[in-house]
Length: 140
Image (tube, rainbow, N blue to C red; front, side, top):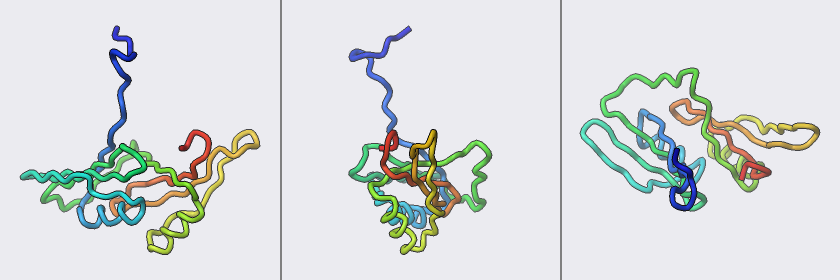
């Protein structure tokens, strides 16, 4: 058994990948909604990989566009959501509303009489759910 320590560092989460139908539409959504810009774009014969990021985190969102696909992806029962945190949830909700990105209502989630989380959900052009959380507690 390998013991994880300085000699064997812990794994580091670096990206999550989703499949999208239209590159321009998806890049535009994630840029407007979360300030994610293209960090790298890799074009291949049958697919394109677009890595999106911003200065807030090293974590990236990888968009995969399979060329020639015409049928929307079935997100299935296993997909949950992506999550981002913001400094001011109310301002962010107003901003994305003004952009016409149709966020859901702000929800406050309490546990044992204390605020656990404030959040709202959005849906990207391909149907992926994104939770937008107020930075608080474990949601930094």
